[in-house]
Image 1 (cartoon, rainbow, N blue to C red):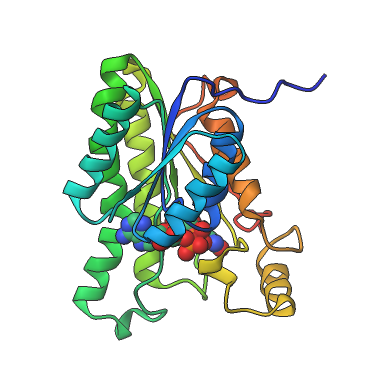
Image 2 (cartoon, rainbow, N blue to C red):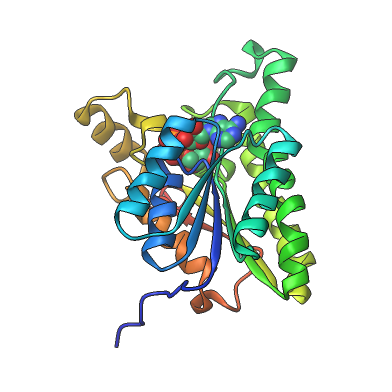
Length: 256
Ligand SMILES: NC(=O)c1ccc[n+]([C@@H]2O[C@H](COP(=O)([O-])OP(=O)(O)OC[C@H]3O[C@@H](n4cnc5c(N)ncnc54)[C@H](O)[C@@H]3O)[C@@H](O)[C@H]2O)c1
């Protein structure tokens, strides 16, 4: 017997980095499941394009230009969701990326701090703004985006990025435990190599296949939709007894 598709009618979801890749797929998945979606992204062209796409399919969505390294932007995004729709039920804190080198000797201190800020402190910043309205309302669900490089040494992943993502895993664990009694579940997804503009946009198809086959047990790259499905499931009632975990959605990359 198959479970019914998750239903998010009447709920509001905030997606950071919703303009591209995994975040865009997540915005599409929440919208298709009936949620009103706030797309928070640094890039207004990508963010507005995502919102236009959701609206063209009958969804209710809003773009807000947000730099997740700025607390005032994050606070403004959460306030906008509250003012517009009166609630915030779900959040996918998804922004991250490599702004440092593969070899730690090549990094400057500024690059390390910038990488930690973009990948780890930003997740804390988002949860700091999202948790109070969720707690006041009696509950909510948050999913953060980690990375397989948080769990193992990946030659192709910058050191500072991998360490920051390992921090996301533990921050998710601590926050998941800390806010469980207040009804907020906090989990993470951990992608392997996923076909997105940010990760594979500059690669040829055969290069993606070659890299994915070397990294994964399932010999292909992940698709953004596969991450989005996991995010949606973790935010749904089907995952009502799950908090503090990081779910690998990585084709067996960490297991391999
Ligand atoms: N794609 C992969 O192979 C892969 C693997 C492991 C982890 N991840 C993680 O998944 C997440 C999404 O990756 P993706 O490949 O979909 O990325 P992407 O580059 O395709 O999209 C990232 C989006 O984030 C936005 N963004 C960048 N900086 C921002 C900021 N400061 N504030 C707000 N928005 C900002 C960009 O404008 C863009 O729309 C990241 O955290 C990444 O580290 C991806």
